[in-house]
Length: 123
View (cartoon, rainbow, N blue to C red):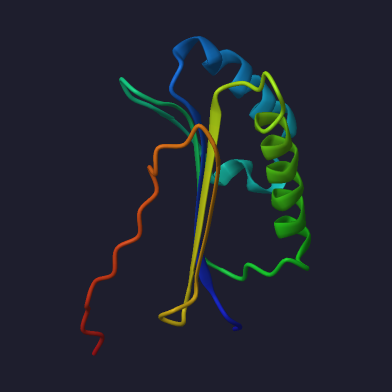
């Protein structure tokens, strides 16, 4: 069984003219094993992608997680360069333990990922 987490990440821009380049970058670089968990998002403010997986073993040593982290490194290195595109990245992982929450943000972000807790009865 193992320890499980819920993971969500967004890769987005607030500038509509940046969308084609962002889409090309993600299409060419996002790990194939996670592409089914990647969804195009768009609104009047944002264009981009949301990556969402639930109830997953998210260990840095697992090949899929390594591939995801390699993509994020490439993406964040690009958006942190001088004259970088105005793209953003936000990540959140929520584990089974109450205090096990990990988050990261880079670039021109707007805090679009938020975590809420709710009380449920499981019987």
